[in-house]
Amino acid sequence: ETGVTQSPTHLIKTRGQQVTLRCSSQSGHNTVSWYQQALGQGPQFIFQYYREEENGRGNFPPRFSGLQFPNYSSELNVNALELDDSALYLCASSLDPGTNTEAFFGQGTRLTVV
Amino acid sequence: GNSVTQMEGPVTLSEEAFLTINCTYTATGYPSLFWYVQYPGEGLQLLLKATKADDKGSNKGFEATYRKETTSFHLEKGSVQVSDSAVYFCALGDNYGQNFVFGPGTRLSVLP
Image (cartoon, rainbow over all chains, first blue to last red):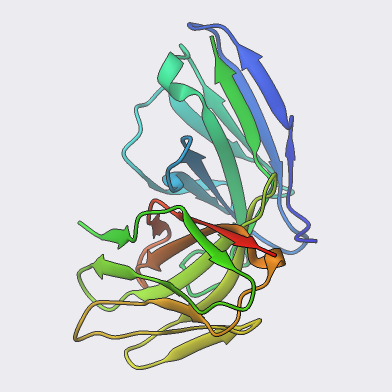
């Protein structure tokens, strides 16, 4: 059991709507990263938060935004949803930034945009 | 930029067969290399890793050796079990960065 929990597990939204996904990091971890995993593909890095600040961003448009709270939990917000946003969204928490620190992944939120 | 290529799946094997899943990478600098596994309905779990050239990562009977000369990190297991059925992702991590670059994944099915 990794201790990283994501909610909700499944979600259906209509094109153009907005969505918020949530992630509770493992106890003691101050870094949360978000990934998008389209069907049949590997996860792609969206962004990372470290101590409440954005600490790097992948090739995603500004309508993908995030937050990290003082307890290090995090939200991923997506505005103006498009059909191609349908994917599994994974969050990963780690003790510190950098991939030499082991990252623990949650089970993901399956988002379907119709 | 950094990228990871994996052998196409799905891979179907009989129990106790030998497994190889090929992985090659393109990267600047000296990345760490990882294998993650995703069981049905679950998130990713770290299987093994290697942080420098010639390192061998191993876990649960799986092994992979970091080969800088061939830019490869092939996953092997001598005798697979039905419980190894999952999707396997090769990934690299820039030691100076903050994110993983994943390959497309290889689905393994092991038949009894």
